[in-house]
Image (cartoon, rainbow, N blue to C red; front, side):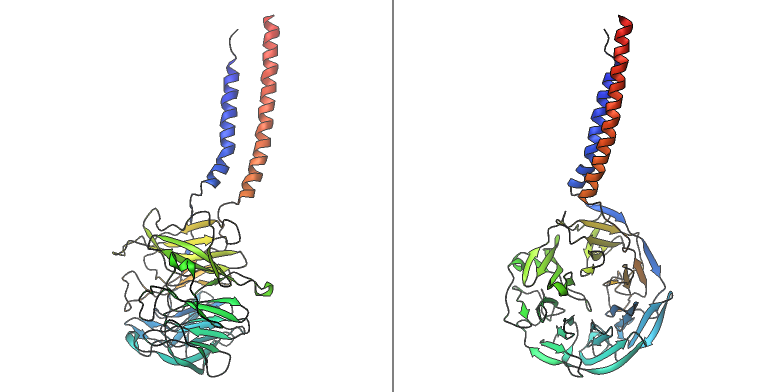
Length: 442
């Protein structure tokens, strides 16, 4: 008796379906990088090209304040974005490479910066921006002249300030009075340090570079309260250097629950980048599904911006651009690494834009809508005299990464039940057909 051809078809079908069922789980388990296109909108240009400025969100509006403009000339102006346009404002003082802190009141403190054009000198000046009235008011003065400083707003409302450029550093505190108060000396003079909350009224301060931008052989961590110490992780991994006006850490904790957790980028050489999790004074690497890629399908990626967290989505973002060092003739794309930091290991999704030739490289700000905005910055010519006037909105607010494992499990379970039912029905029909053939032959 001849073998029925449907039997071999059924075997092939069963094998194919089983392989199909394994594909989703296999794809998830390979830990391959998920690359997704990024929607970018070019917004209206700034009124004034800017670099070394502060960018912050206050009163629901993105504000670009101070910095220097074309020709490396300081500008005592700011502008806020509303109703599809940038609106120019006059500041009390210029703040080129100055510091910024959003206060618990919603007002913003701006301070320091270069005293003259061409990045010369430092200043004492301090002023307050009120987003309700779009006005700047000269308010007081720093304990000492500063530029390339950083800040941290404490739970108490006090603001810790540290960092300097070609001038001795110290730690000082702004408590709302007209004069910032000296807190303590520093173990190392630093440029643009990381400042991280470790408790309700304590913080740590560190940087990979001194106030001449020379790399430290050993990184010493200062405490606001307590003695300096060293971090074992920094023997193999180093924190990234920060741009002017950026904050040193991404806070992802919960003060109400006493959780003081922050994230920072750390690097090993120029080919490896990872995320360090800082819980109090304990530093460790955050487990992730795969490393942060240093190359895209088009070029090398320079991850230049510090981590920004969107606590409403439990996601943190790093922004980069495409380059080919040292020629700097990269693909001119925006790249965004999105880290779902509450999951273990944390999934990383990489978003990429189409080339944006006119975009400046500058640290982004998180908008109230959950997107990222990049305003002004340094152009691909990489000089301080010809700076960007452009603004771009990077749509990450509605972006989602790869599906979590439980989604794949549910999907696989439903698909398995469905396909199993089909196979059983087909086998029963085949059995019935064979029985009928045997009856006919008899």
